[in-house]
Image (cartoon, rainbow, N blue to C red; front, side):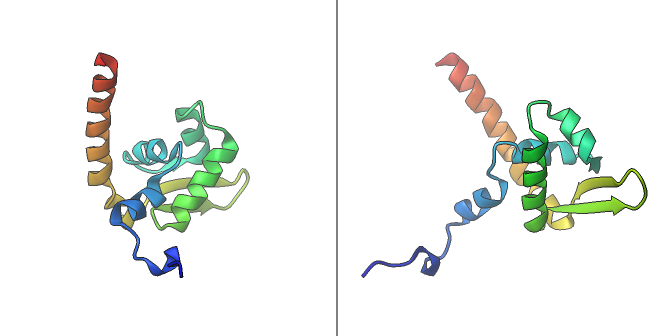
Length: 111
């Protein structure tokens, strides 16, 4: 009889990647390291991302407890995002990934 994947403890690396994996999640997190940003500011800082994809990633990161969504009443509605204290625990991980990524890009160019 097969074993259900739900019964197996998740790999810590897979658990991490399940939160930050996504075409633009790393970029979004990197942009928010400098402080809160409004949705439109994020969109403009990542010209290649669609609004739909940005909102999807923001929702997922908020649901995971990585981001806080702040909403100010009034017209127009002002919404901005920031890293939560829990999200800030990802900063060392992102820094290591960035360092490794730079080295990998150098490796790829020299290959």
